[in-house]
Image (cartoon, rainbow, N blue to C red; front, top):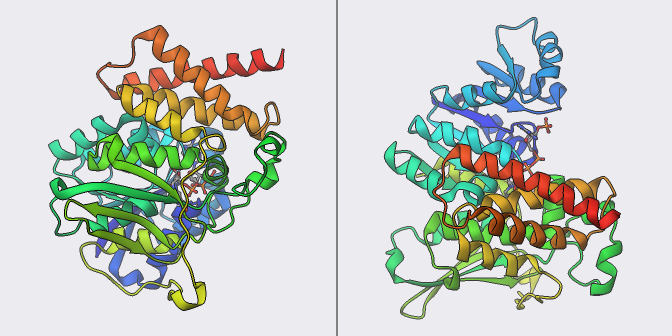
Length: 390
Ligand code: NDP
């Protein structure tokens, strides 16, 4: 029996992970499940999977969780420290699927126990890539990427020498607004931005897909995880979302990873690694799809990709600035304080101001520094938004 924990169990990736575990429960012992506001789901899953521990991120919900599990032996806890303790509980495989920078401290803690970390929380690599990779190395932990593009690259590199890689292509669906006139983007509503044409995902990553800030995060993630140079990483819009990534080698050959847009493939690959198991994904009907299209993304439509290049040039803590500004700008968009296209402007201003003001570009990365810079950048984003509205 493999001992596993799922951080962010109540979310889209977490529920897809549990869907796979549910199919062969005899293979797994569930150690810890964590969630946020969705206590009903968390309690139901903790009971179904007989988890040892259930944790909510929110201390004010502890009593609700306790009440929901009062007739069981399942331990309950709440708060940021409890999330870290859940990640520290001995487990052979841990899914990091909390959304946002809140997922970083638990990812970091999980690696310290030398486990296999299935990493969906891209914010961990964007904000603290070098720290995370070093922590994995020192503790003999393994990170298996779960983002579908990075899982695709990971799979294409099996048995290959990364020194022979000439370039990688990460594909992007183009999101909800790929065919909209650019001048109308500012008026896009929250509902429209939350509707992905191909993938069924959590709300925040769906909005980030519409603006391509999700792809910007993935480019930085690929740089941090695989160590490719920024100029080796290319993005192509591929509306069919069938080719997830391609790896080009020095001899001119390309390995393309092809699969249906179903996260259970990448999650299942990480869960079963190094084996492959049958997964409940639809078989591909390539003849039915007929043709695959690829286009260069329009820089005017997607300023996020240019900002990702700036972050990769600066490195240091600029990934933490970028992510915090992005998360906060999205909060303001969700709350109706700024328009869709304003998000990029907020992020660009914060990136320029915080990096320049604080000499953070070459700073050494520690977890505390990342969290401090995150805090500073959020406040800065709030000031920028206030300025826009005054
Ligand atoms: P969801 O919003 O669906 O789920 C997020 C999970 O994190 C939920 O369990 C939520 O709890 C919990 N959570 C939210 N806020 C906090 C917090 N402050 N502290 C602790 N836990 C919290 O997100 P997704 O599953 O879509 O995405 C998770 C991560 O995986 C993200 O980093 C995303 O970018 C990445 N990813 C997602 C993909 C997808 O297909 N969805 C694909 C590739 C990567 P609750 O809901 O109970 O409040």
